[in-house]
Image (cartoon, rainbow, N blue to C red; front, side, top):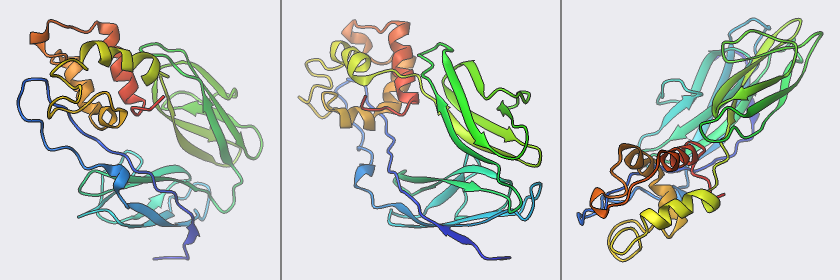
Length: 271
């Protein structure tokens, strides 16, 4: 490996995924591993800056500990790979994650810069978009040499650092100065609340006698931890119309289905 890599600190974050059974009386599938108990973490990050502004020779290498079984490493939305070494990178902010066989994940953001550039995206702020609406506003704060220009995703560069009328989702933010350009990722949230919106939907349609109320082997949706663990399954089953159980005579409105989907897409937050 060329050059000497620079060590950085890293913070691990555990997340979990799961699925849910309908209230059919059948035995619930084995629960997903509780990733809040996982010791998987990224313990070291080393980087090598780009030798020039337009070079593609940046390097990121991470080391992880803990977790179970084989691990895979992923840079942004790229393909997973078995090692934590990523080469031939442009300048920008990268999201690097490691995942073990239990689907537990540790994640960290890493900034790569060029040795001859002081261009940096210091912060990206956004407002909530609302569910199925385009009310999001994204503001980019950056510094560099000369006039700065900004764009999101594959749009055109503009001198203003604010972008409006945005839906929820992840955006690639690019800033260009007189010499270089750099990128970062930012997610706009819908702002759907578990306490104010999702809990009521579950209470009136799912937490019923004999179904998700803790009185049988099915997940108890009175407990937020079990709702979060099964969030992706709740999303898919409510979207397909299989939850609530058809025999219950209960149905969700499209607005309720959208709220659940938006809440899950936001990360199934306890908000």
